Length: 342
Ligand SMILES: [Zn+2]
Image 1 (cartoon, helix red, strand yellow):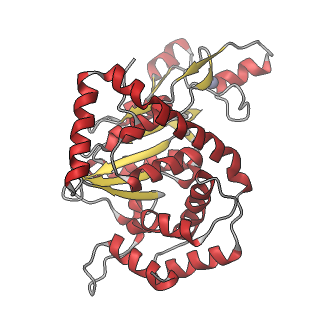
Image 2 (cartoon, protein in one colour):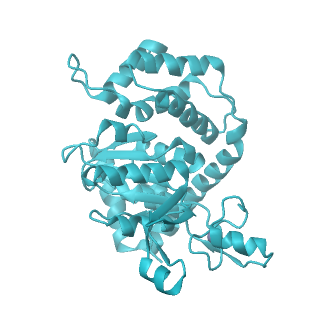
């Protein structure tokens, strides 16, 4: 089994870590776009998080890893078995992190229908793709800005609907595909269209640490990990388990966390002052703040949560301003200070 760099051993990168924890608590917040230079550990954090999440119970033999406890969300094959009341074996699987390589064909991504076998043998021959493998986990797309727009659109659509539908020549196959989409991009290498960017729930920026102390910690930990992975992972396992318990508790608490009207008003004022289009900004602010409160063990969303999540929830939704060339994160932070005070 692959041994991943422990999530808890990642130095700094608070914004990215919080965004990932939020998606682990409430996947409906939507995908995360990670901006940053190469070698800043963008995929390390995703893999580390997936590795610490509790293993998922899945139906043995199901090609999609269906959850036996979720009959409504089962695939066609599992449904047929359920209808026959067949006893089903289950096993535990790690939460998947699937990489979508640049240049992957659409068939590889969505799955391939073998039309010839359908015609000659009359069987629905479907070879599941990467979306099927990502079900219940994470789909990681490095350099999402270099992917064709229609493919990005498709990924976001499937992530939002939780279902992949493949149609060829009047035949169709559908299967569950609920995953959190994580896109990474280097802003210097091509931009993502604003309409696509807006469909990500959160966006974060990662960079190489600027202070000496953090830099030394990053290098030390990386070196220790490379030299003796098993030992390093064992050393951090207590911290990882703490995060695992924090996520489990937050998931339980989430539905009961209260969002006061005053908070919704402030979220709307913030979006209005920044001129964001549509209501996706407000909805993301509310969902992300609710998950953040749940992670902190709190039952009510407050301004403190708004301060924590406003920048990642909004920075990718701002239009360029000809009068203001400061970064969008700076503009969100400024609007936040105007609204809530320093
Ligand atoms: Zn199934």
